[in-house]
Amino acid sequence: MAAGKPGSLGAVARDVRLKATPQQSGVWVAAAITNHGDGPADYEVTVRVTGPGGFSAEGKFRADRLAPEAQGGGGLLFADRGGAPVPTEATATVVDITRRPTAR
Image: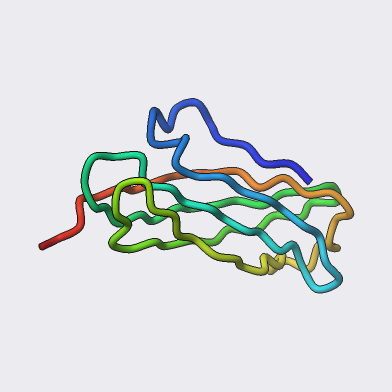
C-alpha cells in the first residue's frame, strides 16, 4: 500500500494524504485533506489507483468550506472498469488538486 504525490502539484500537494487498502471488490482509498491556507477553501482532488496486472482506476474527492487547519476528505472504493484483477498491493497517486477560496 503506497501513496504518492507528483512534485508538479506545488505547495498545495502537502494538503492531501492518501492510504490505499486492497479489498476483495476493489481498492479502498482514504483521503485526508487539510487546509494549510490562510482562509476557508474548497478542494477537488483527482486520484489514480494503479497496481500489478493492469489495474487502473480514477476518482475524485471533494472537501468544501474547510477552515484554515481543518481537515476533510473521506473514502472511495476504486474498481478497474476494464476488469483487471484487484491487486494485493496498490498505489494511490494525486493527479490533480484544485483549491479555491470558499465563496462567501
